[in-house]
Length: 219
Image 1 (cartoon, rainbow, N blue to C red):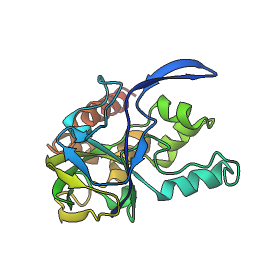
Image 2: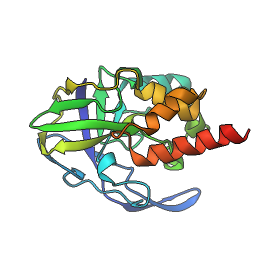
Image 3: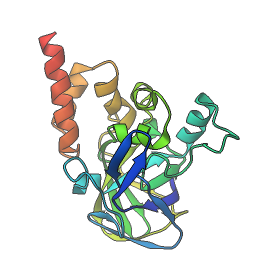
Image 4: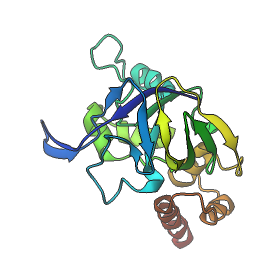
């Protein structure tokens, strides 16, 4: 896996045809080396501190390969609206990995830093509002092309083009794809219950997972 693009952003108010909204989702690429702290990339902030900005969400990764899928699905090539790095507000656009290749708890060395996978990204309405594509949010959930979050174990300096070298994999069965399926697809109850006991899994995802388990139990 490799960092294709690094992006940072600041909260701002956006005016569009639906009114005004506040977000830091309009992130911009950074070319040179940049400091990666326990909170994330230097110069990057979030607007919604209730749902974002915890150490377990320090870095949001999104596979570059997904943009080709969306551009084809929505016939965006040549329209001036084609999606690309940063379109869904990630911090790192990555190559050579998708959700099936990355596992909860994976530890990677990158630059002089070390990071750990904590959870899938949970799709939100701001992604659809930014890209202005009808049904984008629901299709992201259905296809589980979500990306994932990292926590920073060791701060350091990172830059685009660097490799994320896998150092440790404790839960090879708990891919981001399978973790996504527990919420957006067919629930594997035994796997979901196992996930609740994984300390590396982001607490916010555990709450979502527990709600899904309770919903199924009541059905």
